[in-house]
Image (cartoon, rainbow, N blue to C red):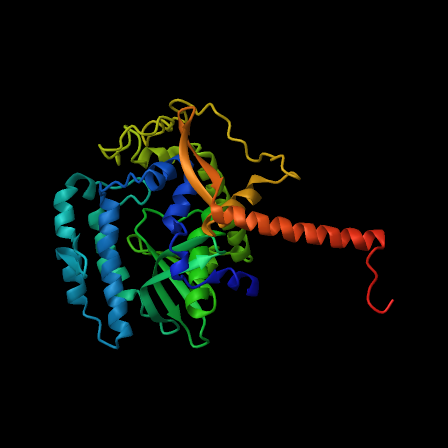
Length: 400
């Protein structure tokens, strides 16, 4: 645990140039590097909403407000919680107002979808809301063993001196032994498969946040499916033994791959059935007109036609590892973090230039870098001659 803790520290002014990483960003990259590039590198942020997203927002808000009532020692006002869920909620801050639509407006906006049963649960959203009002809302956050200490817990920390990880945890609870439990609300149609929960990167990142905020990771991790009244926790295989160390290795691997692809300017697509919901190709129901058709490599899978054919298969092979002829062979996964560190220290300058129809990132040494190179060469020569003198017997230790 000490080794992991040493990778985490507070964000300072000097860190503001570091890239930001959230679980959503990590997950998007893991599922498809090209989608990650189109969204986060090219900054094609879609404002197109969907019923699952909007209904999830208002239900999260109702549960957040219930948690705050309990934390403040107030009686839970269920009439108020149901009212804001139905009518909507206006969030205000210094910068802007955000109106979260309630169920009444969502019924009108997504009428057909709202009253159509999905294939996984066999229920429509009207039936799911009955479950939320009658089972989920009254029973959640009422455990005698666990007490909420934070809802919508914001976090931000530097990881491994290379990236700022940030985000929000839906709920953090604590028990009498001062142990922590993390709960993440899901408005999904079904619970996750076993393969998806043994090392869930979302909880790995949340545990790093808890180490930063509370000095310890959580001992209990829960997915709460608030539209179907289902919970997945340790008994269901969430975060199996050794998950945190496995997750750290995966996180490091993802960061190395991000660095590698940024340097090359090449982000390969990963066509899967998930393409159907991606906003960057024209046949997706979530396609934003502004960005539709940006991806030419997507899967042709649809819920009706379960085809695994791919439009315009990606012909160029992306090498997983190349060897650079420096003084010795060095893996790119080792080289890219070094280049990023040199850039952060002001020793290298980066610029983009088109190469064979693609933008590639190039590095040039700065004046500070040249001064540092002269200094290091001098240090190396002194070290080299000292070692050489010892080997050749020209340097006699004191007292001999």
